[in-house]
Length: 296
Image 1 (cartoon, rainbow, N blue to C red):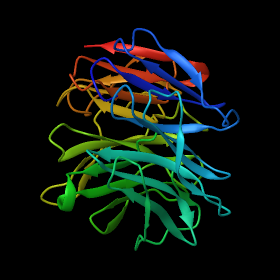
Image 2 (cartoon, helix red, strand yellow):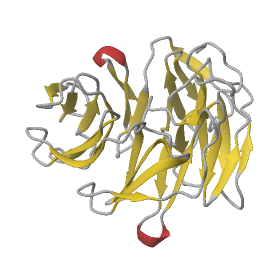
Image 3 (cartoon, rainbow, N blue to C red):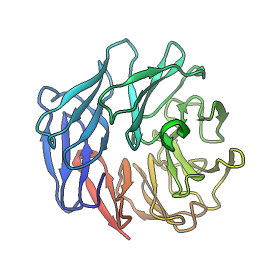
Image 4 (tube, helix red, strand yellow):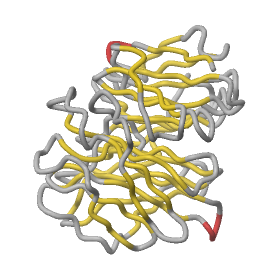
């Protein structure tokens, strides 16, 4: 979502959607040659330029510079087990994360708006049964620009951990099953606090241990909410420093105190949520092409 009027979305069966009127209407298009691919994440820069990620078999990243009329391949990896989960950009700098290859998380970085990608060795070994969820494209975040940038990401599955600044920290979230753990991150506008959301997508009404609040400075700390959300959540977004929207297959919840207390506002399930750059609305997307606009 690069401007207040332009919104992009991606989905299954090679489909991509674009709105040029602030999410009031969308035009769906199928990416030629990729009708059977599942695009789990999209990053957009303007009405002409966007990047989409097809997760596996093989893992592919495509880029358009003509509003979706044509797409060119900027990354491909056909190794067995390759599965991309999420992308994030800060300015021209991007990062993509994938499930473990040879026992380590797969990372690739871009310094040119996704025109090229360079695999980056990560020092952190992944545990058995630990991976990343591709439910919302929000389990990795880039902080800062150029040499000062840092990357933080969260894992799930049998073990759920928080990776930041060279450290891997166990998370007190639901764990022990392939369907449990952290699904995404949401950063406070101050970039120093945020929330981690997840739970158990196979038991999405279980509300305990589905969210954590965190702070990065002076050191990484975690705390539990006072009133948890209604169940499993795959994505969240800070509408302001205090208002936070979270969504998942269990429905939509809202917090007005920075994530401490949550109240369910809808039973309709969505997978991902993002905020417009002007801060006037949010967009949520779910299954079967479902898209909702939230005004605030």
